[in-house]
Image (tube, rainbow, N blue to C red; front, side):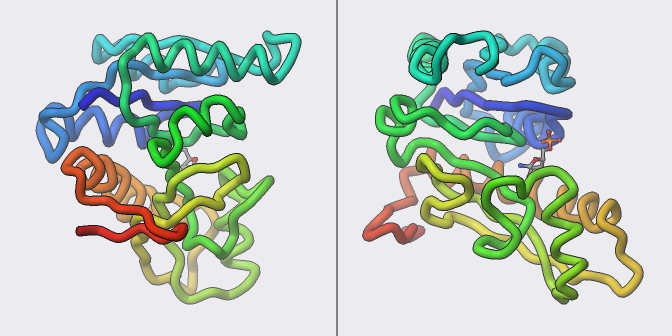
Length: 206
Ligand code: GRF
């Protein structure tokens, strides 16, 4: 199966996917395209270092949301990807892409949805909010994507304990290493194997 991975920043989740295609659970998966919302994303270097085609499609370079949405759609269609994986991608998906790739877009969020998610909850902020609330576990969620932030059916979640001396940065690091880099490749595996069924907005793993 070919996939497209969408990024905006460092791309450690992209790296986890790349590593699994080389020597892990995604050996039959091809990353056909890395699409970045920013030309400065380090994720683009990770793609180049691994011979993966990449493209920058920035909302600010287009006159309208419609034109940007069309450009994203065209890039994905041209790549032949059957699944779009949002791996630290910060733009809300456009309506054309969402409808064309209905139930074929997943996102990784660094908290246990429905906690600490939605507009503005990216980067370090979910971890700051988790510590401010005093939760005793946090983690990551892979979910399908619709036109709203962090709202589609939940596919996988993994939790870790919050430690008494955690800072937002230490919590972020442990959640990336122990949760995000594991469940995002696992989610791609499950979808590639046809094991995921969505009924009434609920994901079932067969
Ligand atoms: C990750 O925490 C991811 O869950 C969130 O944005 C961050 C991206 O990190 N959506 P990276 O670019 O994969 O290193």
